[in-house]
Image 1 (tube, rainbow, N blue to C red):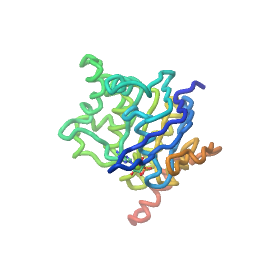
Image 2: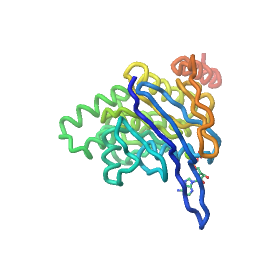
Image 3: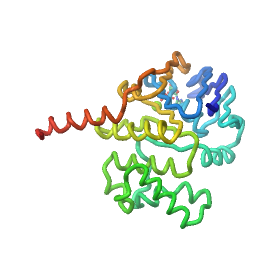
Image 4: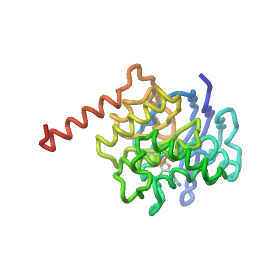
Length: 252
Ligand code: ADP
Ligand code: MG
């Protein structure tokens, strides 16, 4: 397995009203390609700060970050934007889709930034939407889609550039349990069948249970890092959640 992420002594300080907040103290973290990693920890422990560093949205105050062998911690904002476009896909809690814009156009967007010609963009965006099971919703705008479908568009958009690393900060935070497991089943399949690497932040134990590995952050440090020998199968949990939803709804 190839090493995708290598953090060494990574810290991030914020100066707030004259006092120093150490959002990350000193984090060492290695992630190999093909892993599904959950990052958990209490609110304010530094999870989002860590994701922002991993996603090259932010630069560490100290320490080094190698992404796919490239030392990204010292790069300036323009260079980091390039790295994001080439190596990373983002899935956010709020989906961050453009309103009044179709699923297809939303999915194409990262390729527009790359200067990919229109016909090729269409083809790849369609392939990505098929991958997430939205081939019959490509002309719908976000307002015309359910929360789960919107999150699938966001995943299609994250996949369209074929990035080695997918980052998701609380991607199921606003979703009911059926939709949560739909999203998780998709992420699990992307890791198991398509060899993707996923790093996901969550505060829900049921969500973390689906990952191959759980990294716990507390007070700006990694305090435990455990492999899960038999992670929950999100597809099976999805079937269970669907059955429960039908029972609650009074169906068969
Ligand atoms: P989590 O995602 O685990 O809830 P965060 O990474 O958002 O935690 O925050 C970790 C700590 O850093 C918190 O104490 C938070 O208040 C602080 N922090 C995060 N972002 C900023 C910022 N932009 N400016 C100042 N302090 C911040
Ligand atoms: Mg957070």
